[in-house]
Amino acid sequence: MRLAGVLLLTLIGGCQADADALDQAISASLAKQDYRLIVRAGRGEVAPGIAVGEQAAAKARCGVRYLDGFGDVIKPDQKEAHARLSTYASEYNQLMVTHCPAASGADKQ
Image 1 (tube, rainbow, N blue to C red):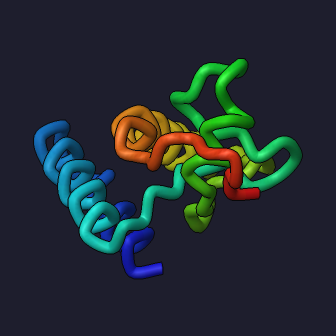
Image 2: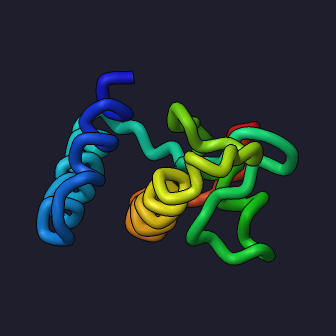
């Protein structure tokens, strides 16, 4: 949950701060060998930034995790924050999927 707090603070900053936070988050996850993709909580668990046809395979190969406040129910006062989280998740997933272990006969479920 600490990552979500850092993310929210970073999202308030500028583009360079966003890029730095993204790089730091990727580096921290890789250091822990945590290759999970960020998915939107709710129906379908969509992983932003991953092509529709690749969703199931990518999620099975990498695993999934959630961000606080990133679900499929959006209140009017949360639209801007949700859009920033969606952009972050998309960029994070596009980078992280390149680091996921190669698919094997025993994919994660």
